[in-house]
Length: 129
Image 1 (cartoon, helix red, strand yellow):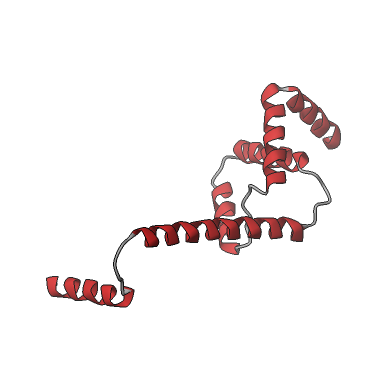
Image 2: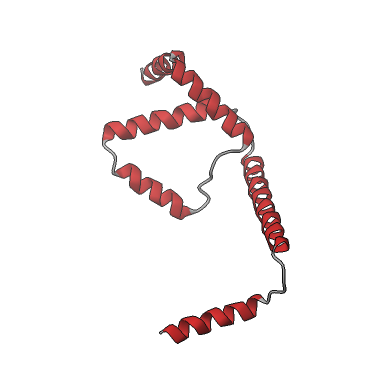
């Protein structure tokens, strides 16, 4: 009976225009690797604490949302492949940021000694105290 209720709810939800749109968005985000992982136990613990604060009806709504998201994802994709894609995405973002930092550094004229600059900043702050 529980299975029948779940199927009926899924069929009803899938017929709604917003439901179809969300399924499409979830599939596209998953295929693009645009999602976060909870590899840190701290993050998972925080999420669990927040869920515990929800009313039972809200928890059920959240569960239904997660189930829809999971149904929209293709099955059988190895976790290692997903994590590797996420790692590559983060690496590309870091490389782009470093390239941007290099471009800014090249646009600034003159010689810089970061260690000396830090010493001067510390001395200035110490002299103010």
